[in-house]
Amino acid sequence: MSISVCDTFSRFISGLDLADLVVNADLLQLSCDAIEDLHAETNPHQQLSSTLSVRHKLVQQSNCTIIAFATSPLCTKDHILKGGDLVSSSTLKEQKFPLFDFLRSNGNPSFSILRVAINLFKDYFQELSQLKDQIHDSTTEELLVNSRLIVTGHSLGGTIASLFTLWLLDNIKKTAGRNQLPFCITFGSPLIGDQGLQRAISEHSQWNSCFLHVAAFKDLSPRIFITSQPDPQYKPFGTYFFCSELGCNCVDDPEVVSRLLKSTITPVSAEEMGIDDYSGTVKHLKSGLIMKDNSQLGQPVTPSLRPGMILQLKAIGFEITDQQQNNSINDLISELERHENQMAQQMKAIDLNEKLNMVKIRMAYLEWYKKDCKAKGVGYYDSYKNLSFKRDREVTKHKKVLSDYWKKLVEDFERKPQKEGAFMRETWLFAGTNYRRMVEPLDIAQYYKQTGKRDYLTHGRSRHYILLEQWQKEQTEKLAGPLNDKKKQSVAGILTEDSCFWMKVEEALISCKLLRDETSSTSEKQSAREFLNTFEQYVMDQINNYAVSPEIFLEKSSFTKWWKDFQEIIETSHNSPLTDFMKKGRDLEYKRGQF
Image 1 (cartoon, rainbow, N blue to C red):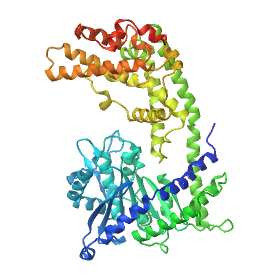
Image 2 (image 1 turned 180 degrees about the vertical axis):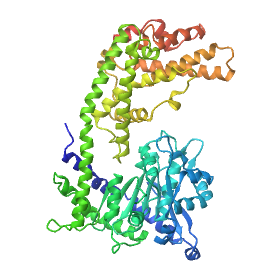
Image 3 (image 1 turned 90 degrees about the vertical axis):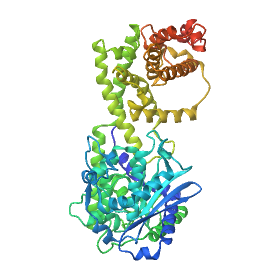
Image 4 (image 1 turned 90 degrees about the horizontal axis):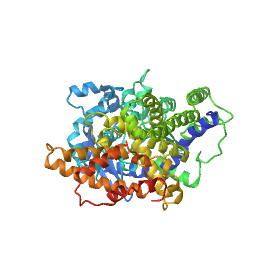
C-alpha cells in the first residue's frame, strides 16, 4: 500500500496532539517559574554590569528536578548579534576546549557553535563542572536525581541549557532509557549551531528528542539569525513548540522549522519577549486547552493537505480566514505543501510495506539456510562462523540488507517523540524480534571469529539490537503468562529467544581455555570459574523455559564443544542441574517438548 496525502497529513497534524500533551504536562509552566525565580534573585548590580555572566538554580519538584539558566544582565538582541558569528569545532580544539568533540564523526567531521554561547559556556565552565558533578556520577555514568531532569533557560540562558544538556547526554550511560535522559526546554533561544551541529545531534536520534524549543509567534530571538542573514548558516535541531495566545503546535522537521521561523515574523511585528511573556502565554494556553476555548486542537480534520497546513499556521498565531488569505500566507502554505508532498513521494519511493515484503523474502532465505545447516548436522551459527561453503558467504549479503533496513527503521521510530510505551506497532515489533533473534547470532559469530575478541555486549553490539530487545521486553511484560504446552510442542522449530545466547557460549569457551592455560593468572582463573557457574545456571534457565533452539545440542555446535571442554576441567564430584541434564541425555526429551 502506498503512502497517500492523507497519510502525510496524519503525520503532519500529530504535532498538534504533541503540543496538547506538552502543555498539559505542566513542564512548561514549571520551567518558566524556575527561570522567573532565578531572575528575581539576581543582584541589581549584576543587571547593571556590561559583562554577561551566567547563573543557575536547581529546583526540586514533586515530579521532576529542574536546572534553570539565566544571564546577567538580561539578554538583549544586541548581546546576541554582537557574538553572532560561528566558532568551528577545529577552532575550539585549537583553543584547547574540545569538550564537544564527541559530536564529530567520520561522516560529520566538523560543526560550528554560536560564539556568544560557547564563550559563556567556557567562561562559566568551572561552575558548570561543579553542577554536573552534583547531579551526575562519573563512575556509574548515571544521573543522581530521583525524578526526570529538566534543563531550561530563556534566550542566551537557553543556549547554555542546550549545551549543558548535550554535555550530559554524552556522559550518561549509553543504555539509559528515554525517561532517564535529561529533557531540555528553552524559551526564546537563538539558534546555536550550523548544519554540522544539526546533523551531529540527528545522528544520535534519541538525543534529538531530548530538546524542546519554545518559540513565541512574535519573539525575535529564535529568528534573529534566520531574518538577519540572506543565506542563514544557522540550523535548528530538536522539536519546536510554536505558540501564541491563539494556540500552539509542535514541529520536528528541521526544514519546516526553518521556514516557519523565517515566515512568522516581520520587522514590524518583532519583539524581544521576556520569560514573563512566555509564562503568560503558557498560562493562557493551559486555560484554553482545558476549557477548549480558542484552541485549534480537537477540531475535525479535513482529509487533505492544505487544510492541515492552514490549521497548523492558525495554531501558532496566523490569523487566517477561509475567505481571505493574503499572497504571503498563500506562498507559505504552498511551500509547506510542496515540502510535505516531496516527503510523501520519497516515502512512496521506498514504501515501507514493500520494504517489509523484501525483508520477509530475505528472512525466508535465512530460514532456509538455518534448516539446511541443521540437516547437515551443524547449526547455522557455527556454519556461518566457519564460512566453509558458498551459501555461508551468500548469507552476508542478506544480513547486511536486513541490518541496514532495521537500523534505519529503529532510528526513525526512536527519533519521533512518543507516548510512553508506544514504541512500535505490534506487527513491526514482532518482525523486529524475529530479525534480531535470527541475525544477531551471525554478528556474534563474525565478532568472535576475530582472534582475541572479548565482551561483545560492550564492544560489538549495535544499538538497534539493544533497543529492539528493550522494546520487546517491555511488550512481553504486559503479556507475560505461564509457560504453555504450545510453546513446548513447537520447540523444535524455534529461534533461540536470547539473541546473545551464542555470545555467552563464546565467553564460556574462552573461560574454559583460561582455566586450562597454565599462564593464566589467579584472578583470571577465578573470574573464569565464576562466569562458568553463572553460565550453567543461565543455560538451565533457558532450557526450563523452552527458550533455546534444540540446535544447540547438535554434535558440531559450539555449545556441544563447550560442554566437552567443560567436562574435562570440572571435578568428578561437580553436580548441577545442567550436568545432570546433559549426562542423562535429556536433550532428546527437550527436542520433543517432553522435558
